[in-house]
Length: 131
Image (tube, rainbow, N blue to C red):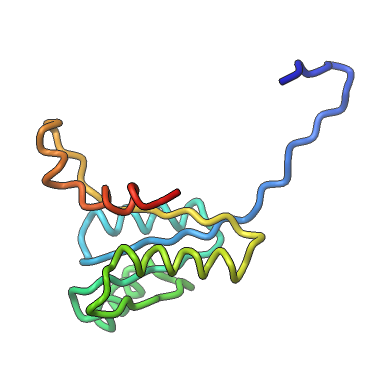
């Protein structure tokens, strides 16, 4: 990498818009923090609803709280591996709009003790699958 010349005019690279994807299973404090962060950094938001609570009820609650205004909801189907469905949804979003960067925001708990991490880190499987 070469050093910058002080006489040369500088220009920052154009930042591509960001599309955030947030997989959620239940409506809890960690999920709300993840959605808040995703809304603060991204121009587009997609919420992937994992199996669990009633999807329509979760959508209404999130919209009432203001956490999912103008968000797109994708309900993942039962019977298939949720990690495969998340990866497939991310691939679809990337292919539909190649001008947007895609960021996956995972909600989670950071335990106080390192030995508790495997008990709480359900996102490890997703991180191991990403290229």
